[in-house]
Length: 365
Ligand code: SF4
Image 1 (cartoon, rainbow, N blue to C red):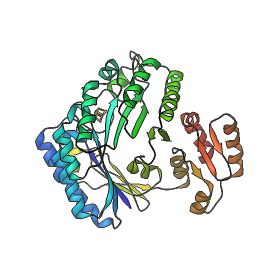
Image 2: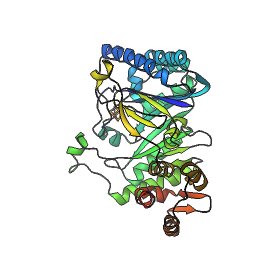
Image 3: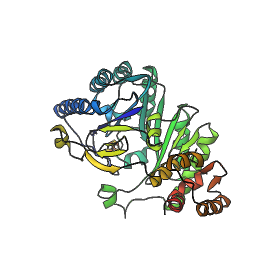
């Protein structure tokens, strides 16, 4: 099985913390982009003989691309590839750029999952993050998606944002839980180089590192007690509602990425498209980015997942055992409550997820 990621590089306006490849565009740019995406999919189709079981429109803000164009891309995928009957088709949305019509259009095209960026339920925090919508619009967007028949919904929140406190985080968590949705993502704000937040870092009122760690653990505890499995560092889902598309990245499964800045991993090779809109429109080829799937990458990706690293699977894949010395070191981390280790494998706890770089470092040194 293979997945398809379609990058939509358009947003209504740029949020001050974001370094994803996206910009504001007019309708004619969106039309040119649609053509380029279809041509690009056509080029990839010869390389893919497997069925497609996940399609993911990310960005940017795919909802800004419009329901009709998204439907045309899906219809092209159906004509050109074998899309499984139960394929997961996700569209990322922004509450400020959706409508009942949009949800009906994408639902009719086959979309069965949406992922919506909320970031915070506290308007002061949302404003600082450059969000255009208020909580009411988030509520209306979720209701409109459900009304259109899409109830596999994920909402995102952000931890460590300006002005955030434990009390305001609780407000956001309570708001999220009021929807009874099957999936929630919680990301820690990272100040990316070159963004407006990077230039303002000295004047931003940010919670300190310890406070952000506590926010992360608090979020994990609250969502776990509300019935969500903390299945990946930043992701929580009700049983069986994990993101199938994103899980394929962590399991090292094949996917192709279409659009400027999108990455692919196919038959052991990695590729990416430059962050160059015009180049993509002109048909630039993807850049070869080396071979993937080595031991270090495998360990790193598996330890992002709550199910962790399975020793037998590792041994079978690489024809060698995990070093005994590393296992002994892991036992020390176990005493500190950062992971569980037994004969079968090793799994990080939420406390361990916070220190995952150091723990993974022991494996891949
Ligand atoms: S809406 Fe999302 S992709 Fe667009 S600028 Fe904001 S954070 Fe970045």
